Figure 1 (tube, rainbow, N blue to C red):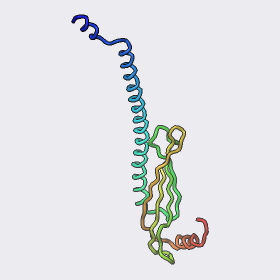
Figure 2: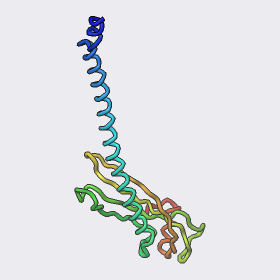
Figure 3: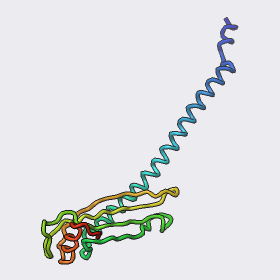
Figure 4: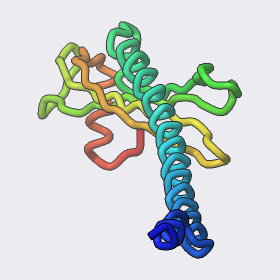
Length: 153
């Protein structure tokens, strides 16, 4: 009886090697998943920062009283490590307007805001649209009429 017990008391070398291989495969899989999770967290952090900045900048543009209905604006976003590696660009265009626009009439303007940044040498962007009412000046109404006839603004 003691011979049977001593033969069954330990692991063989083959059993130890198989158990070690199974553990190594599991650890490599877990480390790969951890690396992917950290990379995705970093990307989401960039997009989260960009969306917060875009929301703030869009709020500024929507309440800006002197913003012309036909405008292209841009600037640098100084929130990252490298000041020149991120920025924003906005374009204001008429979105909805009366059939025969004239000065003093109200129109709906679209503000398209693009926030951009560089990540690992690649340009990433985040785009949001906002809308605001505009009172057209005679010049702006004339530009809308020209645009309807195919002129570039």
